[in-house]
Length: 432
Image (cartoon, rainbow, N blue to C red; front, top):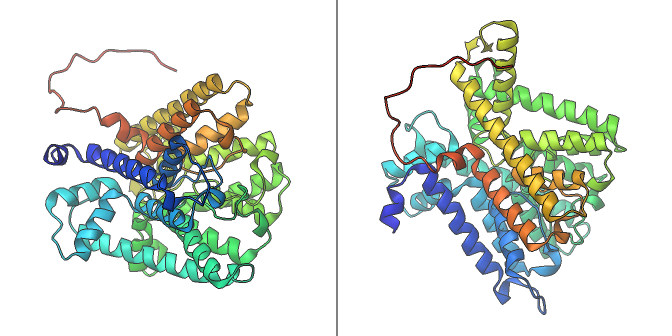
């Protein structure tokens, strides 16, 4: 069975790897040692929580702080770490720690999982990725510990700091504060929100970008095209999101800026989402749909996809060649970006439709937020997650899984052979 699986395309192997992590995680979360004394947990909720953790989403159907024990917290944190780094990176990291050689097949899976251009330097990339993760999460844990130590006993503050740092850097909106309140009690705490935002951005812009910035010593002109595009789009979305949230929803500037950061993939909340205006909800949905950047811990269609899509539209509208930062952009990039966006929109629309059939008493806007949040692996909810029936939870689990792997990866899982060279003559069709 294992030999057969390893012969499959990289996307299929990674998809099965995520499924196995979810399955094992859900079973471990059902163990008595993972639960608080006297707590009963339905398997659907354990599966929901494990999927949310591995898919670095943050949606929860139960109060994590009240249901799980410290051991359960550790299991969830481990699942978040595995999901954030990815199955291929975790596997390679284990091999390197054991002193074993990473073979060509495993390098190809790493390249596929992280959207690398070439197989050369794969192991160096993995080492840098793991080092970056350790640096960010360790620094975040220390700062968060200092903040939480003002409100909690030292040992509990340390646990909260480590968990929150892992969840933030891996863009998973889990929290251990109880009552589904997320960061509401820290809505005015600049050090914590600032640290959380930096961890989210660090995990969301991607390891390729962080590595390029470190090597090029922050010289923007020397950055790779990918890095420049990611930084540009990220900055525009952060600033634009802040201004739009402030203009449409009753939020402070600090909360508006924080939501602009967290809405694209992390899902931490400083104020109830249910209180947002309809315009604010639409902005939230749009940011969740876009998500983070390729090669990161984030979900969504990705910032580079949005950039290429807009450049392609501009090209068709002006009849000029698409270019960016003195580079021409091939037409194939626009085609791929269009396919990804259409598939993603189809998942969100179909998911919302099915959820509205299953949950007719819940308002459409709440269902749209829930489904988009699941697809973008964000973790935002208007509070309806615990109210969902078993069928709706299963649907959410499937959408979170699709969002983590990406709709294009899911679509190509059924590809069984090489494309045939024979084709029909091209036809003409009027469109638009």
